[in-house]
Length: 262
Length: 262
DNA sequence: CTGTCGCCATTGTCCAGACCATCTAGATGG
DNA sequence: CCATCTAGATGGTCTGGACAATGGCGACAG
Image 1 (cartoon, chains in turn green, blue, orange, purple):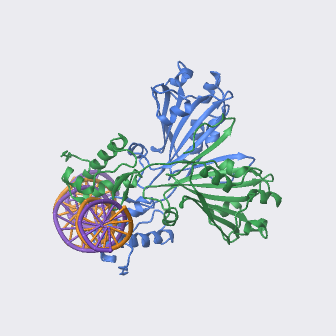
Image 2 (cartoon, chains in turn red, blue, purple, brown):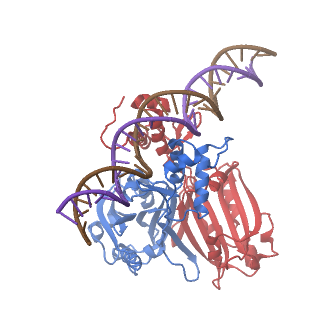
Image 3 (cartoon, chains in turn purple, blue, green, cyan):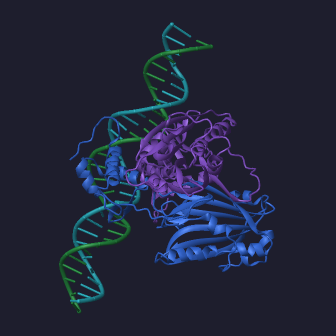
């Protein structure tokens, strides 16, 4: 059908462009199905390899997924709002899991999590933030939180071993009153947080554990909690899939939030 | 050379895995060169198509770039720390461009920017934050900041037209004392900020304007500035390439920062 | 009506080959 | 010694074809 110009831009790019326009122009809505490879082969008069190259572009842009053998579909973003301030500073409020639990349940979905505790030499990003010397160990609570059985994010919290040894924190259970409360009872109340956010493509391990489809970046949120003496007592690494999360941080005097956290 | 198992995992995945391990295991360091396609064809006894499929995996993970026709190279991340709090709340401090300018110059690199001002109906994300009705217009100052002539990030600041009309803000020049100061002089001093961060793959336009290589996600930072009355008077959309930026936000009482912002 | 099984449409993987586009290094000429 | 040109190495694009893997749906049996 539509003849492609032989000029300069590669054919597969032109096909990708037309499909992208069809998607952003609502010719194909969210969850809508794209033409099959065979249809595109016929429409553009090119080989299947070229068509697949075009579709790969869209897949790697995160616009489209292939659900074999049903076809290619337009992806839908479904955001959950993540509020790292609430989650971590409020030593006296509801602990993290409760809030995650509740906000998910409010949408009629069922949350769950796995916890795994161990003593490790933390990765460099964490060791630096906890000001550990090379080879020094820390306790880590690794969590994978899920919604309706599907993994949603990864949450690894590290604590200097010298502080938490023998406490509840090194036990592999949920801490009902929150780990921050336990830290405070141990004499290490946090009064300040430093948030560090980077965006990158996931590692193969992350892609597998979070069941990420191609073209999905992650936000890695490093959080360091400090006591009034300026000592770091907690370092968290949150891995948040970009297609499921947005991060909200407030600073100073802001009006109440009316947005829904779909 | 190394025979690949015929078991289950696709050959191109196995090749990608081996190369990835070589990279993370420091057999190939940052900026290091990967084997050529021809070498991999011979080493694994597969066709060039399969080798290219393996390399495409690494490229889309953001681990590797192909610099044609020199070969494939391991990417290096070079982070600049972005502090949205400094940049926007300090109405009385140095304005944004000055700080950008200075911090870049400190590293011996030369910063620059382009400014473009216009009156538009803002995109939904902005209109919602400024609480504009459908079709209402706003002034937008679009900036592209560059380092050593290479684009670094995109910064689009929107102001409700009713507030800034006739002021300096709608003129296409750098505002030496900062746009926040001008807003304050107009009676709209900001006392609170709301930061909204999402991570996604760039649009073709962003990829082009920021000269992003494949496998590079962006962090989009939406910032809303509120007056003491809770009125939004400024909404900013920052597009930050993931391979060049990290975002730092502090909350509460934290000790001084010793990290260098390489 | 219900469950099972097999066909079929669709995408995934891999092969083999051709020509193009671009940068670099070395040869060549002044 | 320096500038210019050229050949070669390398990745980019596209063709054409073959077989595998998977999930849905319809035909069929109970």
